[in-house]
Image (cartoon, rainbow, N blue to C red; front, side, top):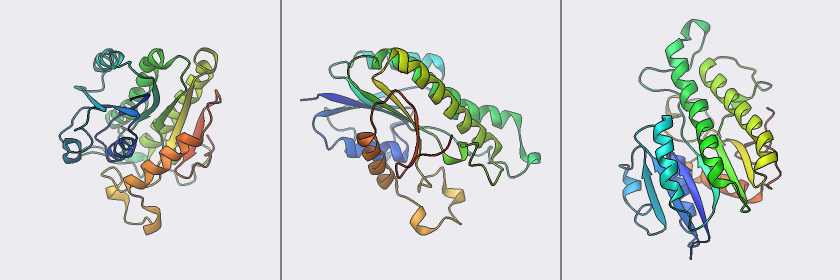
Length: 248
């Protein structure tokens, strides 16, 4: 019998899939998966071939598509959503690279990075809150990064990515102040997964010590443990993969 549900946004990402696989071992937990693309091989096998799993495909992460996904989510209300993971974001693509110096800064790339890493997660907070508000506790995790810490910035560079994660952190902290008044059951966490062996980090793994390059499965396990052990305290948390607090 399903007594709770876990929602994963960006479910076809490596970490999103790893979370889904581990959550699926709990027969009392339903899985709600949102993604633009469910064609990944792992998404075609064990993760999705189960009555516990509901897939919601979105065309993109524009406001209209998010509203459509929320409408579909509202139909799956047989059990409360007790965990939300927003896993998507961007560091680089074919045209975007992290800036090493001021001359590399590009306005259009900055807008794309800010939209993906800050605006889209904020829209999910905004649109999901009415569905999550209630008596059941809900931990809402958004993937941030240590480089989003203003006080911890010692190396410089990566202007757009740093700014997008710092802005996301501010959104989380500000939203938590409001939710402490109107949705005391929701806990917001900004999560730094560490350097994970995924396409996002692939170009930057060369100088990462072997014991600091994590598998998606390891990060998923760490995160689920953190969620299990972090109280719903009407205050935002900015945590790394060890559950240690990062300075905002």
